[in-house]
Image (tube, rainbow, N blue to C red):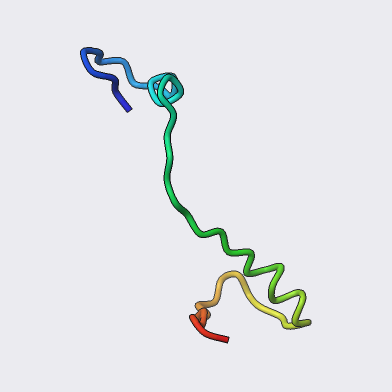
Length: 51
């Protein structure tokens, strides 16, 4: 994140004009707990895209 005419990196460059983006937050552990299911964080598990 470098502003024009500057070689200084930093979050202040984004804070001056703002930043927008998209993201998806998955609470896999919370969802599994709500289903009373167990899981191992070190084992690969496929996450279905449809219920």
